[in-house]
Image (cartoon, rainbow, N blue to C red; front, top):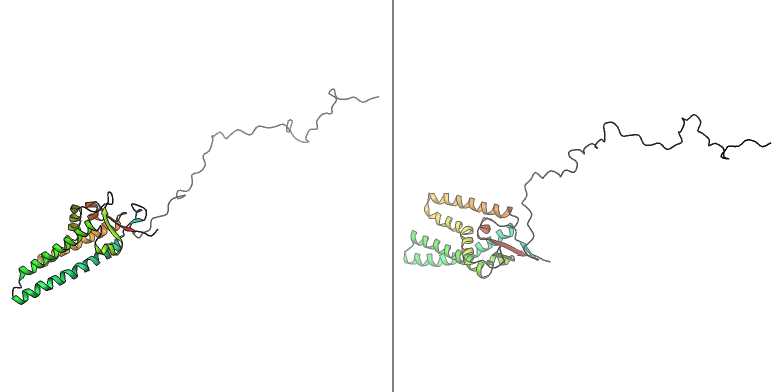
Length: 230
């Protein structure tokens, strides 16, 4: 006698012990909380923040030059070049002044008017020295000694006579005015103080400008550049 079999011809699938009915079937994930989707907590307020600026002041970096191999000249080298020009001018003015004063002493005609004439001659020499070299040589002898050039900021051409004259008036003219002021007793001290403050202002505007254009350069649209090693 044969035993009875399942109608489908197969034994029933085993059920896990102790589990609820249907535990072996796939279950859908639980629904989200009733409060809805929760945003992630924000990052700390100082996350990714740039570091604090240094407390000490420093001049802005110099911008790249107007052309390959050319850089804007820094304030320091320009100051040294200007001092060299002053020494060269001083030598010429001293020689010329000694000749004139020597001749005046020999004839007994030394007076206040002659000293004023000497100051005016020095003023004219300074103007001729800088205006000529800036327009014809693109640089004064002191500038050329350090590889500097004074050019038109717009296109790199030499300065025009008007540009060079105005630049000289703003840069060297006040110094000449202070020299003339020494003949004016008490007012000469005031003039010298104002001229000193003026040069401090020119130095500050030159040192803090990315292209190292002081007020005198910006006013006449000039720029001082230096050839760099490549």
